[in-house]
Length: 595
Image (cartoon, rainbow, N blue to C red; front, side, top):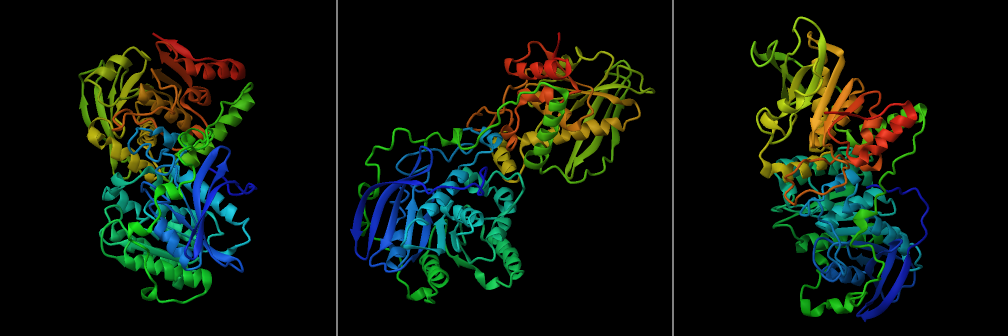
């Protein structure tokens, strides 16, 4: 999620705004400051006549306008059952409308590069809400529950997994397997907050394992647009076995109800019974418990429950928290070869773990094969080879020979760009490295191994959910192509260079840095940063790399790739002055320009 639970925290500052007395309980209205200038509107439902600390439930709001107003019936019923109940607005649809939908409908795929996900803010706000409850004499901190539906359902999973103070959890319509989400394209209907930045390639079974052996009730409808019941059955079965490792199978259960993405009286009553049992040690049959109030006339209007009265604090960060919640890395000051080496290793180690964690643990055999050859097209002919990059992906590299094939010669690997015209890359490469043979590669997403542009939005979001991005897959393909070319008898393995234009220049840079064996890299118009938005439909170059901006950025890669030398076609983009300066100070080298 991008923050640590280990740092000491003071309770959040509370700003009261009124109290409403209801039959059997009161509603305390307030907002709290979860971070400096990040304010969270909340209602606390407190049962009357509390004589000793009571069990408490945090109700996590889903994607519904009005938030704590829309879901008030749940908090009311929990209070009637004796639970102190906190319900608060998310940063999306509450009294202040911020942003959950970044990549979803704004083109903010750079959130992935920043390591930002709105789920992290919601999780933090829940943790801070619980920090507040811990200061109250009327709350029994040994008996804390969490529940919610949809976005609040997924947040229930994350909250309980992250905070061991949550004793019992009841998520509703909030989880499914990655196979189902991506394979059945259910992800397309999901908010960005529903799955974390998944650099470690986890699934909801793993989230559940972090909750075990604490009590967990999973409620799921059987015709949910967003979560296939079959996937729920699958991860519930796996999770039950894991609970069994703790001799706690009885602590995990599944309530399946008919219908779409919604509550059902059966699931609501089961949740009430679940909390009564595990937080109050009361065994009450669910069918004997009254359901929530469904008559809107008996519920309170927004102007009664809202806390700002239309005027939130002037400094509130809700609308812009996506720009500051995750701290991106500042470029380091590097003045020596030793400092450069140390930072190179630091960056590559981080990327291997947090950005390229989905790279295969072991590379599969290339199984290379020459599939085309001709004496035409170049002075000494042309060959095309195919090879395995990764399971299920077989790529082609097409080599134009400027040098005789019976001797080892330098090679320049040129990455073709998406949508390029015929001979476009050839026109670019013919001006480079005249004594080199030239190889052309289409990585995933390009040419024969591409996909229709209308799939770009889906592929970019889906890839991030399973711990990848199109760019990370392309970098892996380029690295594999470099290694494959080194196995060819006509290639001098110590003199291989790489080239790319526009977005592919970034792919070339990262491939060279991670490969560590490239002699040179040739770049034309490389992007100056990962931190830039895309069109809403995602139809531009997919530059995002998970979490990369927490450690580095594109303009730093030439320096971090040293001793690989970097050549630019035309002007060097201004941001790359950082790399040029580092190379001058640390190793008495520079960035170069070729005409």
